[in-house]
Length: 424
Image 1 (cartoon, rainbow, N blue to C red):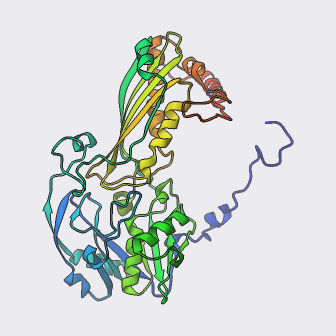
Image 2 (cartoon, rainbow, N blue to C red; image 1 turned 135 degrees about the vertical axis):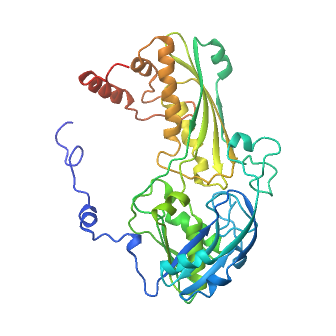
Image 3 (cartoon, rainbow, N blue to C red; image 1 turned 45 degrees about the vertical axis):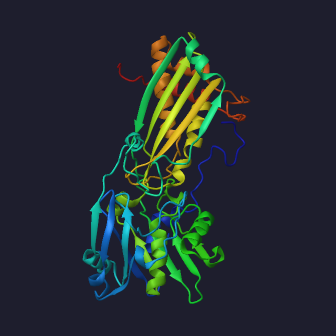
């Protein structure tokens, strides 16, 4: 690094570091308000079932209980990316973490005791967990009002003559890659705190990453104007994309606070975080990569099947990023990309750090290795021959103004030469 820089290449103190390491930072978990009540959520343990009845009578009379809500007590206002779920489920549940009742109480312990007193009767239904099986004729419908489990969202892209390039190639690698659920596992679990003033204005403390989008979605879910929702965004103990959506915890906290006429805090413990926190979306990627005898890429053909789970989140837009990885990392003159997003009875997933890039990169780089081995070309050399360059216009018509992957590969190669791995 050339001299003369005051910031670039220099170690600088993290501005919020001292407060965090000394405990002065106030996270949402630390927030206390006068007369604060504690909320808890009852979830189904069945992946697909009709709700026959919910008996909350014993929970309502437990001393210290301030409010008990089910789907029958609130107006069913759909929310989320595709407006396909409500906060407290009515009629049926579609995955094992679906919310069927909620309690606000003077303490978290009392709220837990009240949940145990709620009796729910279900009629269990056939469930479907594999997205390909969900598309078969006669598969159980996750959403009864739809005639199919195929989601309306679909991302398609076609550039050049993919079939012609595949036919003319010296080598074609054709494989399928399956990627499963991954949880963000943030140090700070999800928390929502809601407080209404006497005029009907809501103040919401949240672990969201998108306060203005959150304000819009929350106001719609509650049926009030956005100007009546104030969103507070305190320091968070990690998010990794989890905070891009609005979730039932947010709406339920506001509904409980309105019913209890007190501020309400819902805080997930670690188990509930694993159960209810959105994960990276599971997907299956079928990828075909073609090259000539010299290892120059000729075409790439990708079809991604995403298991969207029972509901839709912003994670369903990750194919946009997947396409950029498929089409832009290396020079590929012919590209075809297609996606299928499917409803299943799995817990719905969401956006997570990398936003589709880790999934498609795994498939692309796996095929680059296989292609190099098939052609008898060094794996590093194959990548060098196909690198995009600054100024390139990729198939999506993006102009690459900067691109330092060549330098990165050189640096990695130098390290490998200095400390070679054991032979395979």
